[in-house]
Length: 348
Image 1 (cartoon, rainbow, N blue to C red):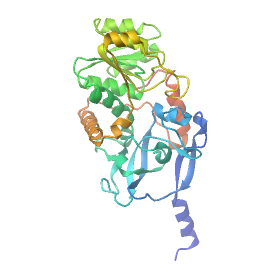
Image 2 (cartoon, rainbow, N blue to C red; image 1 turned 90 degrees about the horizontal axis):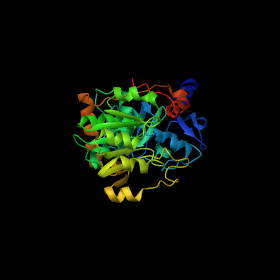
Image 3 (cartoon, rainbow, N blue to C red; image 1 turned 120 degrees about the vertical axis):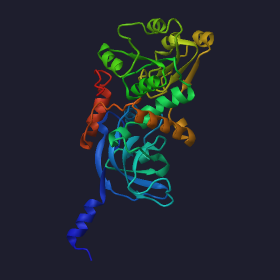
Image 4 (spheres, rainbow, N blue to C red; image 1 turned 90 degrees about the vertical axis):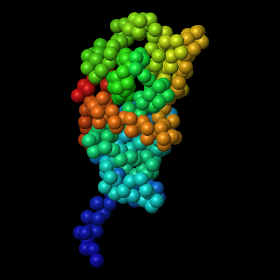
């Protein structure tokens, strides 16, 4: 028989704190809530989260401007996290209690969001990560590095000597793209609006930086490439940029569009105009990209993660964390993420 004190202790232990939101909007809608700790169902696992990371998609999701919609009230949030398996449900074969795991892309963020003290996920969306990585490093890999790898390396077949033009280059995905380009001997050209980010981008490996507040992007790109243009363009802006990027592209170039930072409304709802003459004259390809293409292919996803882990182990890739926050300051982390559009970037 349990006495009253033991029952109270069990009640306290049977709750967990998670991030949820009940309405769309800015960082103020995010709440750290204490909820009952539930057990995973068949095919699911429960993770004790040790670290989590943010990317621009988290802010778009919170605003309901992402291509995946939250279910409110009570929407969970968060794609990237790392932790330890606490409990496994029935029929889980790929991981066991005590395994150190990171989340993979492709799960329903509204239902299974990974940001909080614990997270329940379908087991196919967690993977054991190498011992040489810390939890914060493991939590910072999936969205940035797989996005860049999937577009540039897998689909774009990025190779030695390729000129690779990267917009929003100081973002987590942009930084990953610069590193991946260097890893294969390609030539990363970083594009940023303000001169305050130039030094940091050069220090992390950009071969050249184009500051669009001061320079003409397409003219500078042609100058850097000896008139050829960039074979691969990795773009997170789209709206208002595609004509300029088409000018900066080489013949038969590929322009990967993985975001819409130039839009004022929801992702994909503001039309982005493709310039017809450059597209036809250069035979350009405009490739809308998101990571769920990888999530649908276990073979590609495994190949991408193996490549990334090997390059991290060799030091050719290096996870860079701009700033850390305690869970209680989660909304402040979102504010910091959004302020990075205006600030210089600390890549330490």
